[in-house]
Image (tube, rainbow, N blue to C red; front, side, top):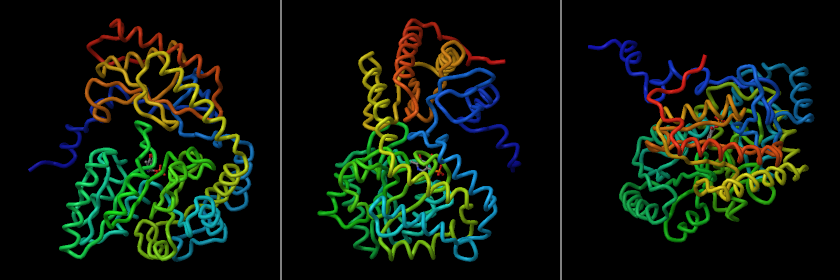
Length: 415
Ligand SMILES: Cc1ncc(COP(=O)(O)O)c(C=O)c1O
C-alpha cells in the first residue's frame, strides 16, 4: 500500500516536475503595478504580452471608478448566499438582461467562474442516455465537464468536419438505440493556437444530424464580430449556437462568466446547475463593474478597433519576418519555434532580462515535444512602437536560437 502524500510528492506531474527550477520565474511569475503593456517583473519594467486584457479595460478610468464605487457601497460580501436562496439582486438581473441583449440570445444566466460554470453546465445539460461529441483540443474545463458525463462521449479531430461527421454518425446510431440526444461542444476561439472553431460548418451539419451546439467563446467575446458579440457574430451563425458561453476573465477584464440560451433552457439551468445552486453568487463589485465594462464595449467601438490595429500589425510583421504563427485568425498570436525545454528557458530569460519583453512560454506537454511556443496577447492599449520593438527583438532571439546560442544541458537559472 502507498501513502497518498508520498506518491504525490514523488511524482509531481508533468508541469510540477519543473517546479523547483522554474517557480517564481518561468512559472508563477509576479507581474506588479497597474495592468498595462508595461509592468514590473522582479524589480524592472517589462513590455508585457501575456494578459488577456484584450480591450484594455482592466485599467480604464471608468472601470476603475465603477469598481471602486461598487466596493465602497456594497463591499465584497453582498449579496450573501447562492442566487437561488438569498444571493439575487436587481444588478445581477440587469447584467443578465444587458448581456442577453448584446449577444442576441433570449436569456442569459450569470456564472461565478468560467471554468466551473462550463463543467457544471455540461453536467446539467446531458443525462446518461445522451452523447457528447467534442473537439479534441477543447479547453480543460470542457474536458472536465465531459469527464463528469455518465454517458458516451466521442471526440473528433480538432476542427476536422469530416471527423466530426463520422462521430455524429456513430452518436446518432447510439442515440436512436438508447433514446438519448447529442450535444456537440467546441470553442469560438482556441486560446492556444488562435484558430477559430468552424462554427458555421459545424452548425450546417444540423441539416443532416439532430444535435444541440454548445460553444465556449472565452476568447471571442469582445474581440470577434462586428460589435464584439463574439465568434458566432463573426461567422454569422449566432442563432445556430444553442448554448453560448463566455467568461468575464478576458475582454471584460474581471471575473465571473455567463451562459446564454433560450428561456426554458436557462430556467432549467438556474434550477439544475449544481455549481450555481450550491455556491455563493458573484459579489456586487464584480456585477456592477461588469455592467460598466459591457457598456464600454457597446459604446466605445474604438477599443476593438485599436485591438485589431495592433493585432494586424503584430501578426503581419511577424509573418513578414518569417515567423511561423500558425493559423491564427484572432488576436491570440502564437510564435512557434523549434527547440528543447532548456533552450526555451534560456531564450525566455534572454527576452526578459536583456530585451525587457515578457510573454508566456508554452512547452511540452501543452505543445508537442520539440516545439517552443511563445504566446502573445495583443491588446487595445499596446502601441505600434511596442509591436515594432517586439518583432525586432524576436528576430534577434530567433537568430540566437538557430545559431545554437541557447543550446544548454540544463534549464536557465535565475537568482
Ligand atoms: C476557452 C476557455 N474556457 C473557459 C475558461 C475559464 O474561464 P475562467 O477563467 O472565468 O474560469 C478559460 C480561461 O482560461 C478559457 O480559455
